[in-house]
Image 1: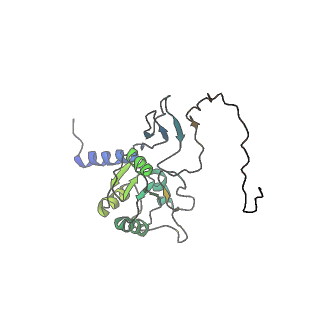
Image 2: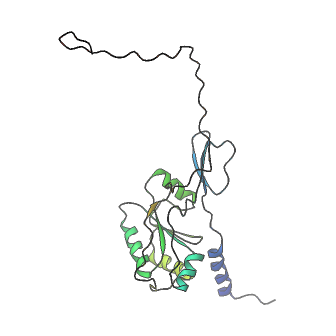
Length: 214
């Protein structure tokens, strides 16, 4: 049996990496011992507070309606999410490179402990900037690696976006998007064991130097 060329096998591996379905944190819950967990699996029955939302793509998303066909196809099959933080010069360089190439992307900012926990649960390191192209995860700004990942995903090498196009406004990674929690389990209220009857408060009195009370 004739073996397949190495180049062919490598191509299949690269395509497979991009077509794999990404793991997205959909649930946030608090454990009985107070830990906050982000996961794509339903929470256990003893979870105290449960919320469900898409933490990888919370908030606004890329509108592909009026994009050129090649860009639209890439954006729908391999959406790009850009993770940044404050006071980050490499983040600005990476952002400019994405805009120059005409990549439609969603930007998620990481500034709180909740954001950091969500980032780690997405399989990304706490180093910035970071990028996901479909299921492919890239940490730290490396223009060569980022450009290669975008090319493999099918994004054009030069911008084809309409002049009027603008990316969605950046939003915190773990921000509340307005979705209502699917379930809430507040701590049970303690029963009132006091036997003292409720009495109205005694009105306070004040006096001035004249002796009048008011």
